[in-house]
Image (tube, rainbow, N blue to C red; front, side, top):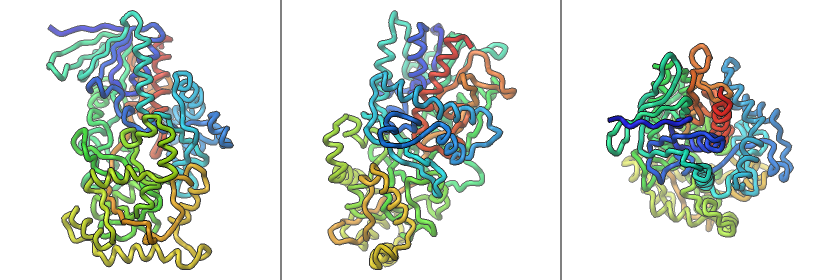
Length: 537
């Protein structure tokens, strides 16, 4: 006999967007069923493992650092950098909503929930030609996104007065119940027992994550006019497979828009202890590292430098002859600049150990560098460039790296420093000097120096691959997070939030993110859905 569970609101997906939707509905007195496919300890989805960076506009923290940001400036940056289609009405509306409300809907709301931010605003995605973030906007949650998730989950249980929350794990929703275009529930399978469960609810909220969690779906959506590497690492959630997106499109006429737009990263390492097949770590590439092709030659003519245009970096990496690149650096650079995105490898921030965090920032994160040296075969260390080249070839089972070529690459860069500062003419050095003008970047970016400086070794080579991360496209929604059909009319009873909705409208970021727009996008779309449901829209 099929089990039946009834509630006012059914939320499909236990990531940040789903949790916030459920929380706001509970606080308004609704009964809520939250259905998640993962295990209880992984409630929170990708947000549980994320770093916790947020692009926020006009905050007190920006004001304290004399950053004159406004929604008007942010919207200009957003539309220009994302190259939003002027005809994509709902994505544009969500972009405007984001910059106008991120302060109140996210920053103020989270502060009221007990979340704190680190006392610095970072400047990321500046654009190759100053066409990205014209001002620093990247706020970091103190405790990483794991603290954010735990805070939201605790609030969820606190709001569960009278047993109004039904929380189910390891359940996969396979279809929605609908009559005459009106959605009234869903059907799920208990993945532990195989039992079918039916849900009844007048409001169904899709919060199942992005489209591209599976490589098959990712490759199917990849734009035909962009290079696609032979292999990719997976930094998305494997359960975010797009199946419910397609079901809604096929059965209810929902629109999947901007499916080919993705926020991938150019410098991934295989996870030493993978949580799923193909699991990769997204590194924050060192600005001072030389970015090389498979032969050990510097990729150019414009050198690859992180922090300016991730989308451009991904295109340049994807078009290389082989599906990997190398980062060449020394220990001095790695200790200052090397980082891995996410909560897992930023434990001093995650665990709120401020003194230890400051100490590592000032003295170098030698702990993380040693950890990767010990755990990852893709993080190669040697005292000489010749020895490094031999290990690089051993890893790739090739003779691609000629030691003389690797030495010539390092020598050519180091030659910039023999002529004095007034005669340096290298775009990577210029970009590094520009980045160091901003205080937080000054602390985490080395002063330019020869790669082969005495005492700066040993040398390090990192074997990098393109890694998938977020879907920028999704189901089209209006500003109430209602799913829209082909006539741009709401599908009665159906809402979509977070990455499943392309973080608003089906693709509010366009082709590029200003970075840090994802967690706030989850929160804002979730709160909009809850308000709409409570108001009976």
